[in-house]
Length: 190
Image 1 (cartoon, rainbow, N blue to C red):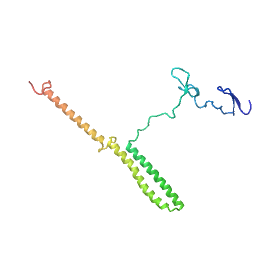
Image 2: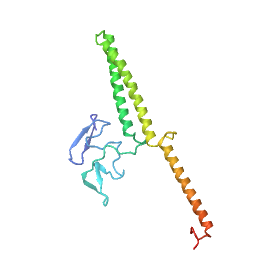
Image 3: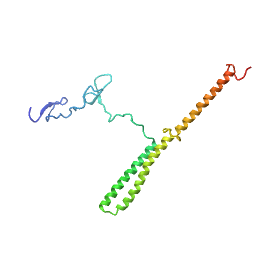
Image 4: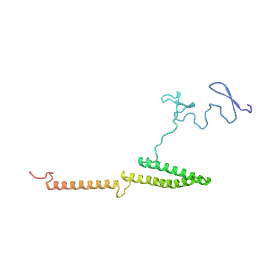
């Protein structure tokens, strides 16, 4: 063969194509993608049918991504809304700080108003971050996640204990009645 490359016959069209050494011909499969035997995918991107081992007529579209289960639970809606608000406020604050810095370097008249607004925006951003924390704590307390003395979870446990205690006392009282009645379970004798 010559130095320009090697000649390959393309199986479909029968035409010869010239390729440089180390390169593949157009339409040739990639080396890092398995061609056959990898599950249901066959050569040429065709899918194998379930009942026959031959390739299906229409090309199968592979999904762009595969859904995986979440590693952590999703944040509750009020907490997520507060977090989004905080991120937006912090982003605006950072932009204002950068503009104030650049206006100060340039000696622009806009530097003083931008510094004042950056200070005010920093206070609002601090409030927004505290709002996320407070919203999360309130949500946890209302929905019985945190076991604090004023929590809903503690009150529910207290009610359950009271109900069990009342149930035990009624069972004891009925047991005493049964023992007194001679084992018949009646309150009085005929």
